Image (cartoon, rainbow over all chains, first blue to last red; front, side):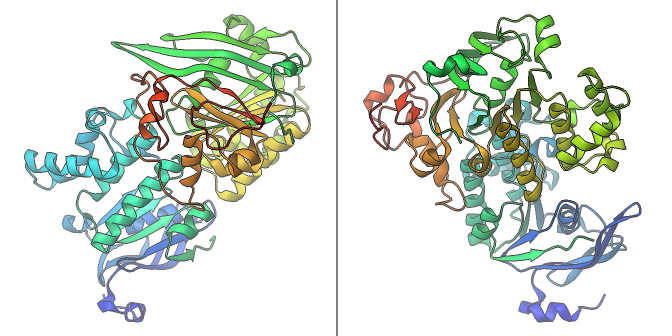
Length: 231
Length: 331
């Protein structure tokens, strides 16, 4: 795969997470048509578009959760997720995603502590390493130890989304994709989640994709805004 | 727009008068204080927004009014409904039979919080909507046209009515649930997070639809975590914290000059204001402090806060705080 001219335009040795001419269709319904998007390290790209314009699909493609019908994803210029690419497992940990509804994104059988630690255990961390990191992250996102022992049904949406944020940060991702991640949260929890993400970003130079319908949140949080046309 | 919070003297004309409503859930080894000593009055034409963080008891309030709580709940207090063309009823004491025949759907509509789980999965949207319309007086011949009209009202393409619930997006399911609640044209509508999953144009469309209902004489109790939504359409806003109303006042006054430190903190968290979270965490509803539940997070707390503050008149509203931020005008 050749590096396209667009990468050189963005410079910095083509650093960043990018979608290249990504096309996705569900059945006969084409939701993304040759879409390009670039997220540089350290920036927060706001993605706008009407319902059904493919914002969430694009986020899933960038998170390497959905293989596009054509086009591909690059991380720092290296093609990783495309119609014909097999994905090295190690790359998955470089991109994390936070969904709108934490309840449908979590395994109801796991305690919040296990939810957060699961990605670490899956990549070979010891129980002690995982629990130390879980405790640090819980503190960062504002979950008290008594909440960590609970399962999803026994906590509020706000508390569960905090756990999902901790889980998303567990592998110190280079890119974090927030798909309406605060839409269900009250103003205070939303501001806290945004502060945790922004602080992580400052320390790690992570690139962030922000999908939101809230113009006030968009203008306060995003450093650059991209409009996704309705297909 | 109503500019004063109704007081007892106007209760005779109220559509809904809730007095001392308290809901407890009994779990093994714990009691959840979901709603505590809640009083409010709702008049025809009024849109009241109840706001607060998730888990503060907002939805339980709606379910208590419709007798939809699980068996481990105990409910005390009163909730008098005076439908314009029916007999007054105490929603808390009313039997299941009366609630089913005269109240649910007919006198009090509910837009449920998770429409995807509230829709019957084996029936298309059209069948659900026409069935509801026919149960509420439309003829077999009139129902299809009425269904199309109501679908259009809520911003749902009538063509999408022929889909089954699993074929609908979250936002479409939300609009279908709203259409079902509006179909019987209830004088009181309880709308529990009716804009979840909708994009901004549809949020505004739905909110404006609720506002128009009030402008033609119905009343709406809007339960939401979205302060911007409340500000757009509500006459008055009640802020709930840890099972209690801590402040209730006309919308503009609440947003311009909040009196309760929690309200002020919540407003400061808005992205177009300070975007700073309220410090600390809300208490567990199974383990509330004896005094003011907000005191552990409150910058103004003193020893006085060990005594629970009562919800007292404050200017044009009500506030429960020993250290309110703006002195209320004399009543």
